[in-house]
Amino acid sequence: MEIKIQLTNASICERLPAPTSGVGAGAWVDFRGVVRGEENGAVIAALEYEAYSPMAEMEMRRIIAELAGDHHCLFVRVIHRVGIVPVGEAAICVGVAARHRAEAFALLAGFMNRLKQDVPIWKRRALTATELTELKTK
Image (cartoon, rainbow, N blue to C red; front, top):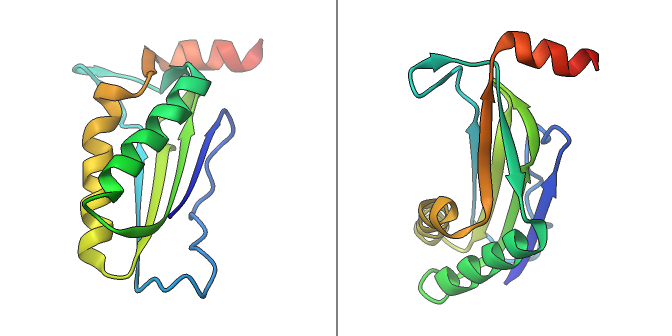
């Protein structure tokens, strides 16, 4: 199985590229986690994410490899934003290719369930519209 992981402070592309043909995939499942305009009951304009990149990438690979033992997939791509992510933009995109959809969905669900508890990526703080504007003008 091929695993690609990327942490970036740039906007995440609209669509994850599907794996190249010839890998035998009959299913390509992708998930996009988008920042909502509310956090803990308060209106926000953005979230700020912080990561310990080497360990986060290693832990994501470990989780995927472990899940692949039960859910035989062919390709997994994870792109996670760090830094400031405005409301409406994706904080994470995950794509999974497998021969059949059930395996792809199961691996994706398992990965997302474990991401927050096991991977050193933290929502550092929520930003108001004023704070976001001030940061953009600096």
